[in-house]
Amino acid sequence: MKKKRMPIGIDNFSSIITQGFYYVDKTGMIKELLDNWGQVNLFTRPRRFGKSLNMSMLQHFFEIGTNISLFEGLEISKETNLCDAFMGKFPVISITLKQVAGRTYQRAEDNIKNILKLEARRFPFLLESDRLDEEDKEELRELRSGKSLVDSSLYSLSRLLCKHYGKRVIILIDEYDAPLQRAYENGYYDDMVKLIRQIFGYALKSNEFLYFSVLTGCMRISKESIFSDLNNPVIHSISDEQFDEWFGFTNAEMVRMLEDLDLLEYYEITREWYDGYRFGQQDVYCPWDAINWCNQLLNTSDRVPQNFWVNSGGTDVIRQFAEQADSMTRDQIGELIEGKTVRKKLTQELTYRDMMDQPENIWSILYTAGYLTYRKRFDDGSYELRIPNREVKNIFIAKVDAWFAARVLEDEDGLQEFFSAFVAGDAEALEDCLNYHLGESVSYLDGGNYEDKETFYHGLLLGMLNSRRGWEIKSNREAGKGRPDIVAFHLRKKDAYIIEVKYAKEESDLEAEAKDALEQIDRQLYDQYFSTRKAKSVIHYGIAFCKKMCKVLTE
Image 1 (spheres, rainbow, N blue to C red):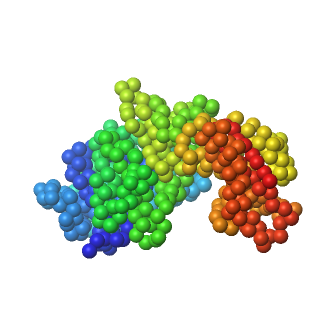
Image 2: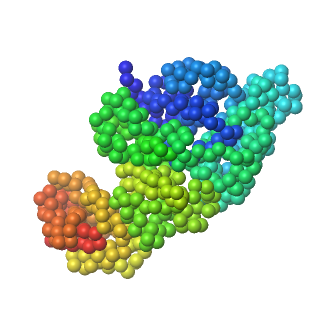
Image 3: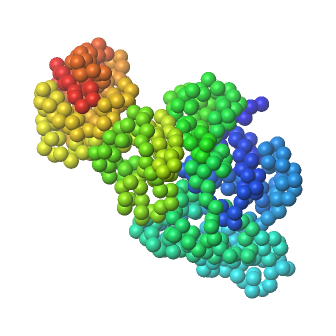
């Protein structure tokens, strides 16, 4: 029987295996890690690419007392000598810092203290150990109560575990950089850098009780900022060939999953929307997208792909990018949206403070965070960058649209002219106003496919219309025989407006497209939307756009 349950939001390896969820076998990572490990191993990948699940897999493989049957039939089970030597043979400390937050440093430090306290409570048997003396046990009690010093807690716990088992400890730290991001956002970055550096210094440098450690994160924080006290950590970034297949789904894995779920007919649309990331020499799909998309296909009748990855986290980096963009950068945004590439030198080792101080760093952030990927690397350290897939392209389009609308809204006089012409049904004045603002737009308007174009102009008009209070603005609502692009209703004056947007491939086609838009409003009986609103009047607008020009017709 085929497995049909998708592990949405489940990053515990044991739960996935024992509860019958679909699992893409990444246990081969264990062999590669053991063949190539350093004492401190850092993996940087964008969010939602399986970091936490892989850390859980490592914990369940190495930890003393593990359920060995979890790995039966998986790739790593073929390595019998390796399994005999390492499976279930080590004490493991495993923490995640992904939930560390707080508007103040003290609150964030308390979060970390609680995480360390809960990890110490996983080992109650140490209180009964005949290998620990009373001082050791008192130290453990302080760890379990949260009274011990935060910076030395991991070191202390590793010492006690090593003394009890007579074996050195493996330390796993998931999402190590999450506290730093939130500290930067809330104004206590220097204090958090100091704390994380101290924790890592105690636990990961010259710790005689440490066998090795694995850390994951989204960003590769500069060595001087965090890792200055460590001896040459081994860093595996998204550009490195080693370990390039273990985070994200390869094409072969994606095809196998679609086959297993009887969904192979959706391969092409899956690839268009969720493939396209390049780690090292491997092209991969975003696992979060793939799992959610397959779950949608299995359990609903909806066959329209969704922006799962984008909707699962913030897009502040795109907003900051748009806000900082100069005219040249805006042109490059347009080229990316059109499917072209840009060539940039990247700095993959940054501090959060550096990120926004130098405008060129934003390209490195977009790349590291997964909003851009690379097609080629050059000897001078530059990369040929592109948008990975349709999902990420959509967020660029949306953010460019929002940026453009915001620029229009800043021009109060121009916006007043727009509304005056709009409410009066003055097509010529409205056309002049829109053409003026289009002249300031990004180069995206010069290319791209029809669907992207119409979406952009549609969004621009929505942004402008939604800037005024006292209006009800709706988009793509059912009316008559179809869905008008935009309907607007002045709540006090009871005047109604219907807008149909078209995109013309050539400027010479503008008038014909605008006329067709007007005819569509009549033909599809869109006026019926206002049948219960007792509108005093209904004005129709057919608006056609082509690059930086538009044509407005009205009845």
